[in-house]
Length: 166
Length: 74
Image 1 (cartoon, helix red, strand yellow):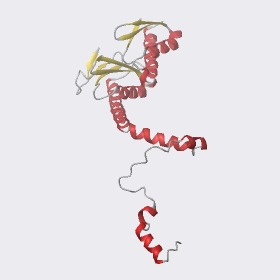
Image 2 (cartoon, helix red, strand yellow; image 1 turned 180 degrees about the vertical axis):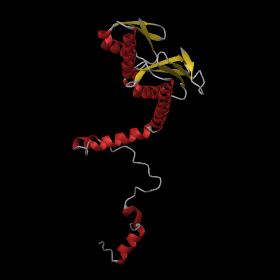
Image 3 (cartoon, each protein chain N blue to C red; image 1 turned 90 degrees about the vertical axis):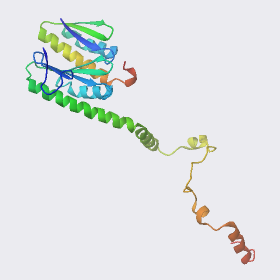
Image 4 (cartoon, each protein chain N blue to C red; image 1 turned 135 degrees about the vertical axis):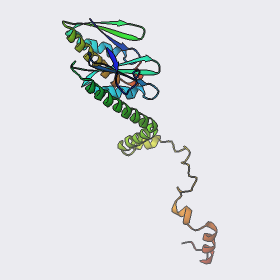
């Protein structure tokens, strides 16, 4: 028989002492399916885990002890631990989603670096007609371009030396 | 007989079939397709054994569902 646990709304959590199981309803908007799978997977060595989707906005997780002699307190502790794990998995899923582009770019660079220097064939196939990299701050300039003598000053210097270039 | 109801939106058919194949030697298993669920009917020597087979089968198919590539999930 399903009974609510004191202090927790009955529509969120119900305990069945005879079956040594506890059913938790979670909001699908807060906890993505990948987080639900992740949290459930961690508990399958301790209890039987059953996932369900009673309506499009909610998941229902039923945790049953593998042995049928669990107390209400043990079930409460179990479902509390599961809820914490679910929150942790949801948070990690969100971090992964937000940083997916950065992770993919880093991985691609690492793999490209691990492939070693390009071969002569690769260089031969390389398209040098591509547009050069954007450099709005003028950083990608050679030292000579940036600090070398200007062309006018160089001509004057050449004349001073009697037209002899060094 | 014990019924295990696995939601079709969460458990791919391939995961259920693979789990049924693994636990078939431990009891009589039958998969029935319903609108929202795969219903696995478990018949074994005792009620306790049926519960255990159903629970382990559920865990096994959950593990396969969780580790299957996202694009193959329902």
